[in-house]
Structure formats: structure tokens, C-alpha cells
Length: 117
Image 1 (spheres, one colour):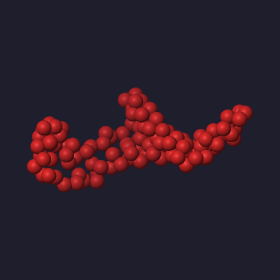
Image 2 (cartoon, rainbow, N blue to C red; image 1 turned 90 degrees about the horizontal axis):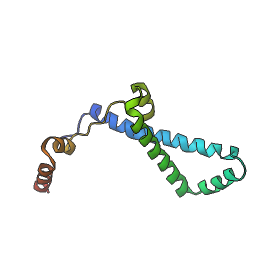
Image 3 (cartoon, one colour; image 1 turned 30 degrees about the vertical axis):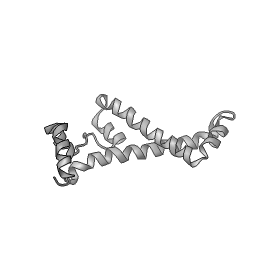
Image 4 (cartoon, one colour; image 1 turned 90 degrees about the vertical axis):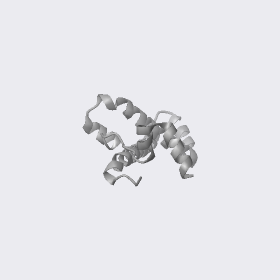
């Protein structure tokens, strides 16, 4: 089983990287809003987000939340909006072992893996 053609891989790439870009944008916007928050809230959040590890965690959470929200909303929104927020309205297709698992079942894939090992 060879690598699937690029056309089959593109939706998966898009649906991975576009939410990452949106998550990064959300994190940057939130960081930009810090000085405009009332009282000491902005200062406290700014101090908390000054750590690289915390910023990475918040960015990761923003990406995960973005993807989960739009995957939940996807059946209810038009394709053009799905393309904008997730990168593709097409469900990703994963060939190779995933194709074999879908058509032959888990036991066959396990037996094949043992045979190849």
C-alpha cells in the first residue's frame, strides 16, 4: 500500500493547520486585549501569560476549543463557512492501514501487522 495521492491528503492537512492558525490568532487577540481589561485583571493575566509554557498551553487550548466548537457546529453551517474556519468542508480520508481497518476489521489488520513484523 503506497501513499495516497496528495488530493486525498489535502483535506486532512487543511483541517489540521487552519485551526492551528485560528488558534494562534485567537491567542494573539486575547493578548492584545489585556491592556484594555478593567482593573488589575489585565495586569494579572499579562503576568500569567508572560511564561512561555503558559502561553503555549493557552494557545493549545484555544486551538482545541476552536476545532471542537466548529466540528460541533459543522453540520449546521454552510460549506463556505466550514472552509473558512476549518480549511475544508470535505471530511479527511486516511488511506493505508485505515482503509484496511475499515474494510477488513481490526483482527485482520492486527494479523497483517504481526506478519510484517
